Length: 102
Image (cartoon, rainbow, N blue to C red; front, top):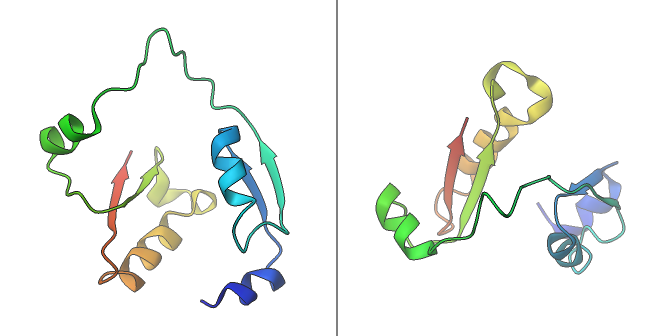
């Protein structure tokens, strides 16, 4: 879809991090309403590890990854699972790895 088409779609974006929010603000989606809602991760319990170790452990490639996480996503239309699957199909040959957990 051409970036100009996003201007006509009524969208509200939610970002779990200020870093991601700043990235969104530099894209064709910058004119949309963007809210920061922290995801509440306890960083004392969960810490960043090696990206390479994670990729090897779970068999992921070095390609950029789009990750979808959602419990009961297939049965809940509001989680966007069907859109995610459709997008993955449309971008099959774009050098991006689509991973779904949940």
